[in-house]
Length: 120
Image (cartoon, rainbow, N blue to C red; front, side, top):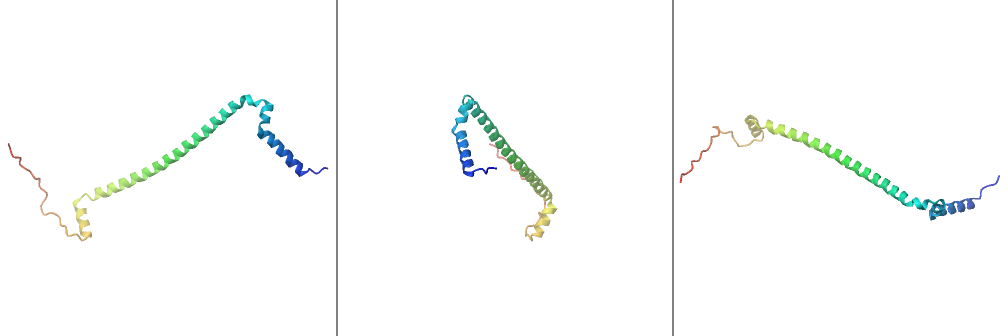
């Protein structure tokens, strides 16, 4: 058996690659007439891939924002419950005592202030 000559094989491969890249194959097979259609198809496929990646990226952002919104809703409701619990007078008095405040509860309940208007 003959041993293949590596230098010949490499030079043949480079020549074939050069013919393909130079465009001789396109002219030989008559593909130059449909080259516009091939380019148009390539552009459409590229646009479809780019659009899909953009939509996927936006969907990931939407899911992350929904997760953050849910966490904020939970935090809001917990804070609201804390404030509703602090609404009673006894809770406020206990908090004042725990912080050693000098404020005291009023002796009499609040009264409505009525201002009489002067008539002209």
